[in-house]
Structures are given as structure tokens and as C-alpha cells.
Amino acid sequence: MRRRHRRAVGQLALSAFLLVPWTVYLSVSLPDRFEARYWPMVWVGFDVMLLVSLAGAGVAVWLRRQALVPLSFVAATLLVCDAWFDVSLSWGRGDVWGSIASAVLVELPLAVLLIMRARRVLKISARLAWQRLGLAGEPPPLYKMPLFVALAPSGSPQGDLEGAQDA
Image (cartoon, rainbow, N blue to C red; front, side, top):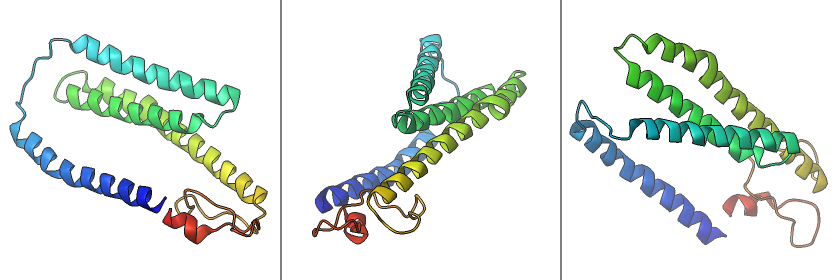
């Protein structure tokens, strides 16, 4: 587990590190104007992905499944991206105000709602797991919660929080 943890941290750090020069390169090399041949297909495809993620999150809520957590985060991310691109691509044109209204009144509030619902489910799940392990008190906040809470080697219900944080 420790090796996987180090590998994951290393991969994410390398990705973030390499994204900096790539972003700088794009900022100076992309053309001011670009005509996309399959523009409708791109936007319809994006909206289909958004629709599938929202429908998946809805079905997960309806069936009371944990899958609503990742599906809600995916849908929220796509909503924020949709708002960003709608506003950015209409900037300086007459329809920018419609894009801003759509972003502020629909897309961003729905993204926040999805994230809050997923966070609530994570907190409830953590509290139930905490209680089932027989741990005293309330679980720590999500940002301090280890990825895995393992049973101590003796089989006691005291979680090996320090070991789990290293995993």
C-alpha cells in the first residue's frame, strides 16, 4: 500500500508539474481564431456526456447507491466546464449575457448542489463506518479522514488511523 501511495502521489505531482509548461506553451502558441469543422458534434457530444452523468447521478440517488458520489462530482465538473466554455466562447458577442445568466442561475448552482449532496453522503457513510468499527466520538472531518480505516492487528475495533494515513 505504501508503494502504491507513493506512486500515486508521484504521478499526480508529475502531472501538475508538467501541466505548467504545457499551459504556458498553449498561451503563446494557440491562434486567436480557430474554425472547428465538427463544432456541432463537439457540443452535442459534450451535452450527451453531461446528460448521461446527470441521469446516472439521478438513478444512483433513486436507488440509494454510493455511485452517486463519483457521478455527482463528474456531473458537477462538466457543468462548471460547460459554464466556462459558454461564457468564454460568447465573450464580446451579444449572447454573452444569456451565457452568463445560464451559468449563474442554472449550471453553477446545480454543480454546487451536486457537490453538497455527494459530500453529505460521504459524511454519513464515514459516520456509519466509524460507528460500525466501534470507534468513540465523531469521525474527523472529511479532509482529515484517512482513505482507509483498518482494524488493528489484534482485531480490536480501534482503527489504525496512523497506518491508514500512510497507506
